[in-house]
Length: 283
Image (cartoon, rainbow, N blue to C red; front, side, top):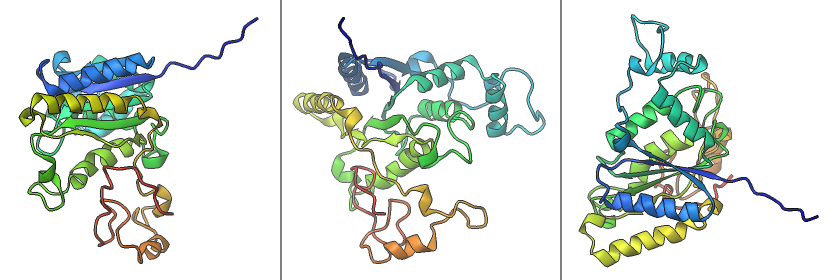
């Protein structure tokens, strides 16, 4: 009798935001679908514009009565509605996709140094308290610590414009709110971002090379080392301590040439490419 070992099928979710099926973002999405499917993944795609996904966070996201109709506090009301299984169907469907996913890829054009409004609405409405985080479950103790996530996006500017001495400033600073404040906050292992620099103003051979490099990277994506963030053990996680770095940690890094991360830089120069390349965090 032959014995076979089965590896559970992995699932990838691509949260996609672009209006045009002829866009470079659509090509990057399709390349990811093809590459991951070829590796045996179950690939889910949330095409937000095609879905007409609602961007605004309102009381319409809740079925039934509100906890406090006179003073509507979205975060509090959504927590109660999630606990009672009273979220709107579109939110519940997206949360089910996230629950299934081992990998979440956000594919989008960079708008005003951030995600398009429709994708921000997905973040606001889907990654709610209780489902995606709590005061006890955040960052490296977060809800999704067994999952990986990454940003894959196009820019309208050249790479040189996003250098520390470029007119737009250091891309690492721009990425911190999304990679740390959203993905890492929910516990995701955050993979290095895939950035397609200025494809709209690049000749066809360059755009083709960008997509080829993306396909090649996708072949080994899940074994990549994630980005490093300051672990929660570095902080005094109490209201008395203000959730600030412990004194001994500050002392430990006092002699280092750079700060710990893009945001916890301790008045020192920002660590180079802290949000762009995986490095081992000193401890």
